[in-house]
Length: 127
Image (cartoon, rainbow, N blue to C red; front, side, top):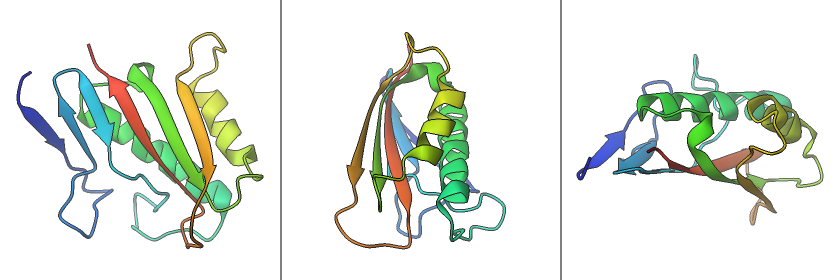
């Protein structure tokens, strides 16, 4: 694959004209992934629901690009309260149960207050 493959998802569409992710050759990079409900598009008010939805969107983006969570190399996570990593760690361990086979992860405090309690982006290598 030498041309760019734009990844769009009906259940996770941005209001701006940008795709959910892009793949060029083996490199897959997402845009920002938030925790909107995949059925309604609404943003739940709680961190636990937003985190679960975010990980569901990650899986959907990977599938649309012909990849799985095994292809993720790094996930960057932005949180409104970085001290509340419990839900993030729960879903992380579910997706990556093997301590010797996990991608890199960086969780940072979000720079500005927002209704988005958690967001991420992913980088994957799909060989």
